[in-house]
Length: 235
Figure 1 (tube, rainbow, N blue to C red):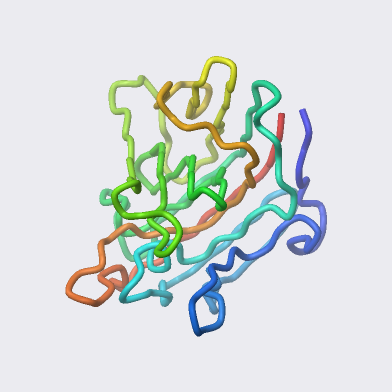
Figure 2: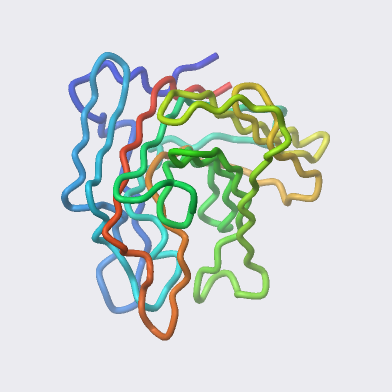
């Protein structure tokens, strides 16, 4: 077991994490950073609070969805054998109940941005979810190859306690061709049909998932989120 960041410093380490930025033609890169986010690191726990989301985009869905997103400076090879990436995470919706995950969720991310392949675990105040995604990236990944699958496993037997830490793990087995999403060691989703990434980054952040309609974002509804993370582990 390798701790990627033990969160022992006074703030986030620049040699561990960076805000994800997306290039834009003829404009500055789009940076996934809420300007009024309050970030605290204390006793091995990272806490981020955004009282009200403000970031949105009216044209490109992948710029509208993530409100605040950081990824690892390091990348990790997933071709040589089974690997598991995990974290403890909790979420508290602010100004929303958490019943509708589209209003906002905290996430633990495992992603290969070069191919747009995303393997996430997410939580609202009420429920955990697995996310399997191929991003639609204009000019790079066509819309017909893109998908977003948000998976809730209501019959998994998981004892989910809102606002409390739970253990989230994403496992890759390239030999078997499988990816598995687990919460508290309970499998909530698994697929054998996923195209395996070669190299991934891990990350954490806050997202909404309301679709852009008629040329405008619908994701800002006066809501926010508080997320907490600890024990970023790479096996």
